[in-house]
Amino acid sequence: MGFMTRPRRLFLAFALLGLGFVTAACGATTRPAGQVHVLTWDGTVNPVMERYIDRGIDTAERSDARAVVLRLDTPGGLDSSMRGVIKRVNTSRVPVIVYVSPSGSRAASAGTFITMAGHVAAMAPNTTIGAATPINSDGSDLEGDLGRKVENDAVAYIRGIAELRGRNADWAELAVREAAAVSENRAVELDVVDFVATGIEDLLRQSQGRPAVVADAFGGVRTVTIDVQGAPLYDNGPSVFEELLYLIADPNIAFLLLTLGGLALVFEVIHPSGMTGIPGVIALLLAFFALGALPTNWVGVGLIAFGFVLILAEVFVTGFGVLGVGGIVALLLGGLILTGSNQVGFQVSRWLVIALMAVVGLVLLGFAGILIKARRMPVRSGREELIGAKGTARSRLDPKGVVVVRGERWDAIAEDAPLEDETPVVVTGLDGLRLTVKRDPASVKLLPAAQVGAEPP
View 1 (tube, one colour):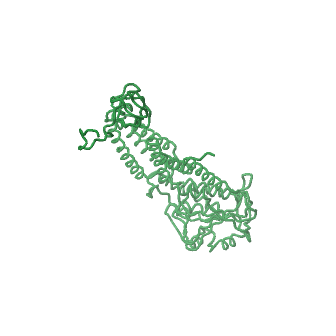
View 2 (cartoon, helix red, strand yellow):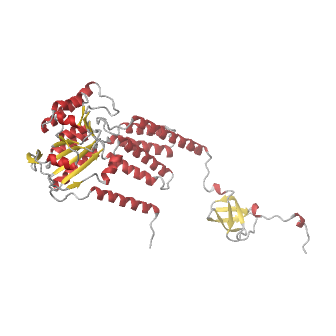
View 3 (cartoon, one colour):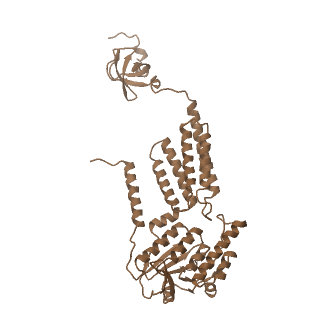
């Protein structure tokens, strides 16, 4: 019976791990009818949240659920993902109740839009909502014509949401233009949300009997009455797959994984061992996994890949550093444009890119020094290096025979024949495929001085 090598075992382990993730991601899409599906999101608004909400509402629709409750705690996030979540709420065939909870949570920035878009909007005690002014990715204000354009677009969008749900459109505009924010009780007084609920049971009790305009199966809308009294709850939280994706779906982490994975593969090509190749492949797979959930500019990915090709070429081709410098420049440009520049809040930190390129440059400089020393060494073929090598006779040399040098069998001729089998020898010359050898001087045992010239008994 054959055995499995270590690389194959590792490959099998990661294949099974990947299968587990796929299984987790493709779990059951239906539940018993008549339940209230509870979704929970605690984090930034990003493409992972968008996918999670879409999956949760889709499961509720397939299961003929009575309603979806979205427990929300977010500081805000990506504008495009926020709009994707709101679009999914607006096209939901079941009522969506957005609940800012637990106590101490907030629905800031993009969370304000999502909360006001719910068919029912509620807040737990000691929660806040508002501060929805668009800002730049580094936290600075958007200035000039671009700032006015983004702000006016956000105002129009949030006023439309508020008017659709019958909420305070004037306050919604203030939340965008002046970063207005209020607590839960003030939000109810201003008609920003519908009520304050102390928990899920209280939330469902106060939601009971409220009208909700939901989508129908034919692309239109219909008005339904929310009926959640006595309905069992189904906690449909993020899957392991989605939690992992949320951890790495960050432009900076994706860039780190992509860069470090590429460097690991370069080292593996230079010095094959599997110790850097396997982690490198894993890092690259995780990087592409994350980039698939981000607004990725694939030209940036191409530049990064081209940069590593140039760096690898520098190792094997005498480019006098030009290829290496070109590779670092390609990596730098690729990192700076890795995500779409029009996506506020989802760009790779330029300082991270510069710092990482500095490290790559230092590593490449070290390699260049080693290569320069190696290239200045005199070139010697493998056969010439046999001169002076030691071996052992594997037959009697009188004067011809066979010797073993560095684990290889050679035809040889002895200068000081005859030499017996197992005699230590040293190579003194090479004639075609035949070695010239002599007895290894280090193996000759000297007689004690008292015995020199003594007559035999």
